[in-house]
Image (tube, rainbow, N blue to C red; front, side):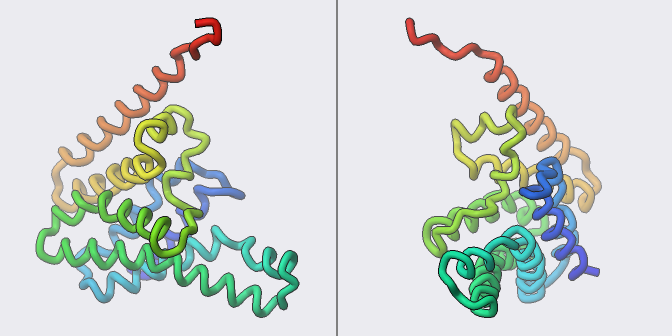
Length: 211
């Protein structure tokens, strides 16, 4: 069941991006992953995270094999191997997140959920700038059509969008596990406030060139 939940998270997350463009799913896509990692040891969580990440990037990067085959004149087999290696490499970001999350949660269950947004964004940033230079599929990019929320990126970048997305989901699961509504309602209030601020900023007229 845990394996299926992790793979479900990967599938739902992929649906947030083109060609599906179901960006609203980004607000719930990681919830199955959090449930799959509940009370799991770090080693087991690493593989669960990798499984979810593999499914995610396998769907998201479906177009990769056609690029080296068409523009690089590589064989279909070699093009597929390049695609497979890239998917495996990128899936390690999910694996790393799951491992660190489980390691924290094993000793401090609530702290793992509270720090989950920081862990997630840390791996997104690390893989983008230090390990791959391939920023494709950052969770925050899924919100390109959510204009009110997108205004946050003008202040704190795409990683802030990813952070808020993970906050809502990790705090939701924390509330369910702890049977306390506080964490989820705190996160929900923050998310609604961010959307309201973004909506109001869209209503502000752009300065004219004459002023």
